[in-house]
Image (cartoon, helix red, strand yellow):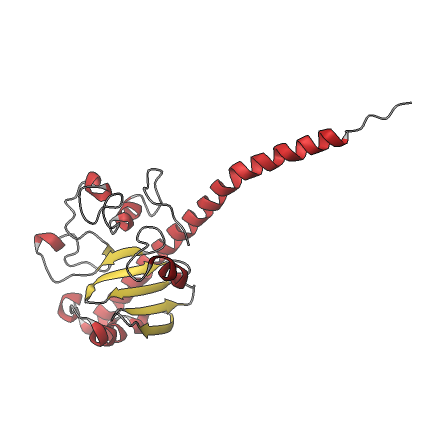
Length: 217
């Protein structure tokens, strides 16, 4: 009576095929997981930061009265007065270049621009790793996402931010989908990538298939 069994060669071939399949599919699965994590945190941050603004409005009045365009230590004092009390912050610091950064309990962080409180940058995951890799002014659309806060000016350059809370960066955006990708110094594909956040927001906080940057953290 003969017993049918796999030969060593057949087993090795099968394992090799499985290995190839895993090698082909694993990077895609990992990237989808990274995208999903960033999408979730961006949406949550947008909600929480604007809730903080709404709470301050109930105490201090319309944001147009208490918003100020500040830099250095003054930006920190302003943030500590109007936003910090309404956020779950575990650590904060004033960086050597004059920008101000706060760390949240979920591991994300928010940094001001060194010269203005108009521009804000959110790190969904591993902020220090992103800064170490791209510097204090880099990684936009990849591991750092630009937001704007300028509710006091109805200047055409800031019209998309007028009388609003902290919004994905839309300064000087002409309103077209094309310019979000290219044609502006802020475009996601050909510019400094500030508009990448707006692309994600306009896709219901989901990274679209034609997103020109690769999420990494």
